Every structure is written in C-alpha cells, then in structure tokens.
Image (cartoon, rainbow over all chains, first blue to last red; front, top):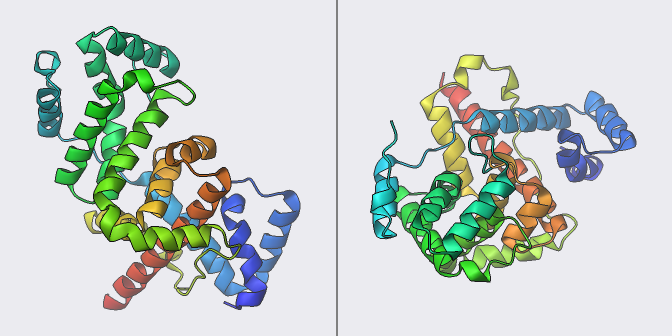
Length: 83
Length: 205
C-alpha cells in the first residue's frame, strides 16, 4: 500500500462501507480500488470482516448467572427459569 | 434493544422506572430481563471472562437500583445502564489499561489516528465453510479482546449492539467524532487480525 496515495481512502472507508459517504467520495474510492489492488483487498476484506461479525451468534447470559443475579439482588421470588 | 412483546422500548422503560421508584421489585426483575443480556454481552467483551463479566453486571444492577433517582432521562434507560456497565468494567481494568487509554486519547485528536493496513491477503474468496467453524467464531471474539477497551467498547456498542453514534457517544461520554474515529480504527484493526489469521490458516492447508 502506497501510504501517500492510499491514505485518503482509509479516512473515508468507514463512511463508504456504511453508505454514508458522499457520491463524490464513493466515485473516488471506486475509481481508486479499480486501479489499486491493495486497496481493493482492504475494502473487500473489511466488508467481509464486518459481515462475519454481524453473523456471529450473540453470547447469551448463562442461566446459572441469571439465577445468581436474582439471588444477589434479593429478587429470588421473581426468578423464573427459562424453558 | 428493549422491546418485549412488541411493546415500545420507551413504554417499558417508563414501567421499569416507575416500578423501581415505587419499590416494586417485579420492576427490577423486568429491568434484568430487558437489559441483562445486552449488558452481559458488553461486560463479557470488555472483561474477556465470564466471572468478571458476571461481577460487572451484578454491580451495575446494584448501582442502578440504588441510584435510580439520579437517572434524569436525558438519555434512554439502556444508554444509562450501558454507561454504568462500561464504568464498572473500566474501574476493574483501569490499572492495566492506563497506558492504552492515554495512547487512544492522543490518537483521537490526530487526523491520522488510524491503523495503516499491513496485511493484503485476499481471504474473501476462501470457501464459505472456512468461515463457518467454532474456531473462526472464537478467533472473532478473541480479536475483540485484543482491542483496547476504548476501541472494543465502541465496536461492541455500535457494530454488535446496534447503538447509534449519538447513543454510543452518550454512553462513553465522548464526542460523536471520537466514536467515529474509534470505530474506524477498531474495524481496521480487526480486519488486520483476521487477515493474518486467514493467511496463516491458508498456509497451513
């Protein structure tokens, strides 16, 4: 990656991926990645990174922790075990 | 994040607040059921172990129920609870994180405060099944743990919990520009780590 020529892209990349960059910035990024293989890889792999995180199952609060939470907060009578 | 039985979040918040303020313990239980899972996820990703995450969540509800009268409603109840969770986690992480926080704070003020990519292995074209494994899911979680708490908190709240930039800024008591800068830096750092992981993984095959 040529740091001088590609640096501008890093600053606008988040907005570009979130669909929040202006039309002019999008056009500039798309023109650049059609010519710069390193930046194309960065854009594609960054997109894929976010996709994998969005697909990641959310960790669940363990049932025993939930029970301990009710107990420690003096709320035991209100605890309903999950089916 | 707090829709139960399709009831709007602000109506549930109003029920919880009125109940806790009047000493109704079932409102505390409703608060735990509504916000406990998301607070636990934030605590787990900041603390990186279940035991500490449990302590942080427990402390958060204890603090919140005791000081419910200090909740002024300027932000949502969820944002307020996230803030207590984050502060409790930071109190526990403070010593080891002192240096990192000061570096992040310095970087926040710099235009070039982002990681310059070093890894250019194109792993997008790997077969789909290479991404669908417990090992990869563990790597994704570990990569969050490698971020400094300043970056992981922004990434978790914005990217994984779906808070807006404004809500994230309110939760962490920073400006919206700082949230944007940290999110950009967190994303690039995670990309770098996953690229290294998939490049190594690809070589090993």
